[in-house]
Amino acid sequence: MTAVLWTILLLLTLAVALLGVKVYLLHKGARQLRDGLEERLSEDTNTLLSLSTRDREMRKLASALNRELRQLRQDRLRYQQGDRELKEGVANISHDLRTPLTAICGYVELLKGQPLAPDILRYLGQIENRTQAMKRLTEELFRYSVAASSQQLELRQVDLGRALEESLLSFYGTFESRRITPEVTLPPAKVERLLDPGALNRVLGNILGNALKYSAGDLTVTLDENGTMAFSNLAPGLDQVAAGRLFDRFYTVEAARNSTGLGLSIAKLLTEQMGGTIAAAYHKGRLTVTLSFPAGSSISP
Image (cartoon, rainbow, N blue to C red; front, side, top):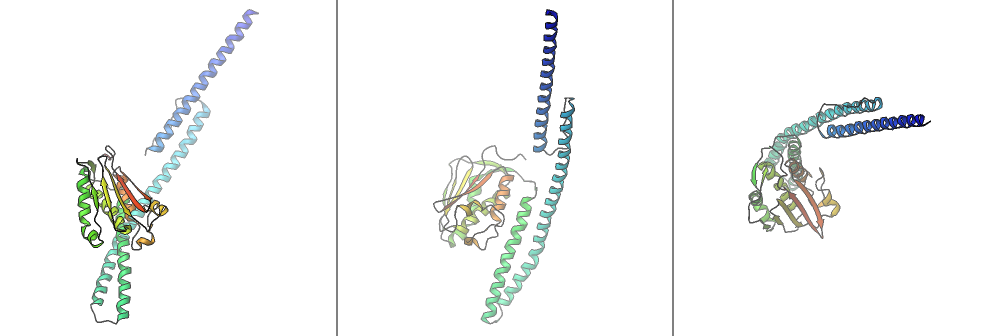
């Protein structure tokens, strides 16, 4: 009787041990699938999922996941190709439109120099305004397409304070005509980051241009030692909802009817390509655009 009990106990122990091994292998296979799936979704790779376990059901699951990965890769390639073709098409169309629009503006200028009736001159003024608006839109479309494409950035050490001062100086005439005297605060020490100087200049110019669109007569600009710039101005034509949509493509408000709605979208694209962040906030009638390039956040060359 004792021998039978020991035999039964031994068999149960073996069964539990085999079950434990089976559960361990299942857990190991599940971890391999999870880790492999996360890796392949986060990276652009052609490798498929593999398993060390020989469990039939786990291998069927891996096979099903690999089929989905193949389909996802094909869809991603089609999307990337279509997206690239669309951006190239927009850039080409925008470039082609600039020449006839420039010619139209030239002919309008010639006609305005002729002795014409007041009504004709008024109509020509409307034509000129609309043509200039189309020129601005095509130019911004071209710039947006270039910024959105995977262009190679030329990274160099850039002094953020100096870049900011140069951008402000480039708007000196506009500030003066609007009677705006910017209040600028810079840190005593240099703040340098590995950035593309041309792209940074475009970002700063678009932010300052946006501030001029909505400013009620003031502008405060600060840069701190952490690489964060803040551009703040009174903006009675905005609200919190509008401020939250300023980075949306083609979004404009009544206060900026002549805007294309692409300036801050371009700024956002370029900022993110250089490893920075940009955001807008609206509080007590003031719009604040914050541009940040923390130390170590720049992309590698």
